[in-house]
Length: 215
Length: 117
Image 1 (cartoon, rainbow over the protein chains, first blue to last red):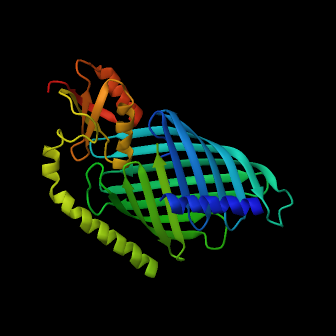
Image 2 (image 1 turned 60 degrees about the horizontal axis):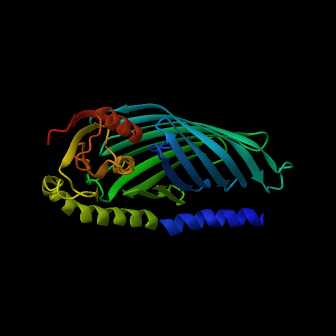
């Protein structure tokens, strides 16, 4: 339990000190570091893109209410990209395989295999953004979660290359388990150069903080 | 509610700070050949009109991909007009098929490649 608390602290600390789901496939040879933190979970993901079609990653995440850790390897695949003069759309399939650990007293088994499947899509212009993702997290006994997230956003001004870009977004988040399984959040997204930062607040006043760095 | 107000204040301040910059956008574009986002200016230019280059954060990939190439001295990205200027080393040529492949690796399509300038 002590190790779990320490690792959770490191993830949160990383988020605060270094500075949406974002695209899981980067440019060829690119390394990406992502940290997502909301009321449900805290996660840290690093992935490498050897081809413009897929990336390989390692993900570690902690689920607050359910009190378990997930460590898994990821394969992220770009199903389809549609480039037009004024927009880009992407469709991804993501999968993960690894271990789930828990200290929760009710669970007899403390460690088991876990797999994740995810489909996501996004479309954006220079001033509009729409995304959707659905994810299934399944372990032998402990985890059986189906998540859906949808976002819409707009840019209040059009910034040039290299300037600070700002987006105002609204997210709907549905989780199959739990009492309060539908939540919405207002999110501010900023990015400049290879840094992307998001801060948001949901209807229950929980804070959301995400950070992405591309190397 | 206080947290939401704080987020709105941050947005307002950011918007006001950058609205002024955008008023000067036409000036910035006209000067774009003189000021590179990376590298050094040369006379050996390739002008590329791209497809799908709508996001600054993602377009950073173009800079990353091209600046790894030995033939490239610098690159200038004009997000507003979907244009990329590649500054090659003197007397160096970069084949169109290579340029198209590099853009594809960065996640974008290519509409035209113009080496006449």
